Image (cartoon, rainbow, N blue to C red; front, top):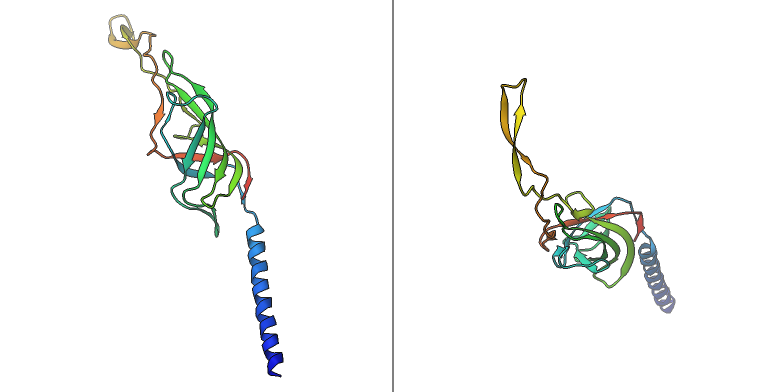
Length: 185
């Protein structure tokens, strides 16, 4: 009788362990959908500059904190977002340099990698830089108000602009990864 109880206890413990392992397996196999447009704040691993990078160069970003979706940590702290330079314009007369970056995968701290489709945004724009330069010279012009006798002298741009500068974002400045399509993790 005692042997039967010991055997039943062992079988019961084994079935509880197997059930717990099966539950863990189903939880780990469940995938979470991350919606298009989801934003994750990241920092560049090294400064981003039109002076340093060429088109198709790899660029790396790290997220500084865990990103949660409900009760699931979708992007653990120190996940690495890997991308490449997909757009590059060097500075020219009147326009500063511009750069665009496409993200293709994320590498998690546990070594797992997942393909994603995302774009880097800085100050709400997916093209970093490309702003106009200030005018190089100004001309005096009379701005008439209500007739020949009255007017104001104004300085107006001459049409010549300064030569553009390289666009640089230091590694201490945050940028945002924005998903281009739904992803499943």
